[in-house]
Image (cartoon, rainbow over all chains, first blue to last red; front, top):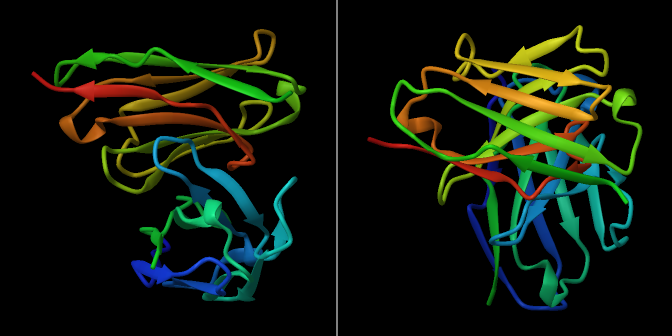
Amino acid sequence: EIVLTQSPDTLSLSPGERATLSCRASQSVSSNYLGWYQQIPGQAPRLLIYGTSSRATGIPNRFSGSGSGTDFTLTISRLEPEDFAVYYCQQYGTSPYTFGQGTKLEIK
Amino acid sequence: QVQLVESGGDLVKPGGSLRLSCAASGFTFSDYYMTWMRQAPGKGLEWVSYISSSGNTIHYADSVKGRFTISRDNAKNSLYLQMNSLRAEDTAVYYCARNLGDCWGQGTLVTVSS
């Protein structure tokens, strides 16, 4: 199975700053089928990015995804208060469709 | 609007069985593949199973293979997860999702404990 490792585990930033979250795969992700989710405590996850770089419906353009092969990045250009949450990457190119362990984005 | 509503979560003893349901509305259910995912208390997300729109293609995580069965009834706009031989480590909130996660339900809690 493909193991996804996210870094850092916790990222402490202030509103208005830029956030860069990393997701590294143990082997190449097929067709760059890599997605990013945001989860606020007590809520279901929300899809942000699919296919490495396509924003899901209704997602603000301050969220962007990039990468290929085994290295992927989620960037939030200017943090808003509602962006502080846990973020997960997931590969869906090869079954089992594994998730990373998550990055907690917290207010500094 | 698109809505997914899970039900069937409960407290069950180790070795027991449970059937989860997911009622879909607001979209053409039969056009989409569907997924079950879960999240143990305080832990990350885990993909559990996937079923194609017709039901002809199914995948499972190794952790549930042979114990869980995914199915769907397109006439009833419903997705199911039959869970047998439940273990303590199956304790989690179970979510159904459209495709691989473009829309999620609110989840249903399964607790496996004696």
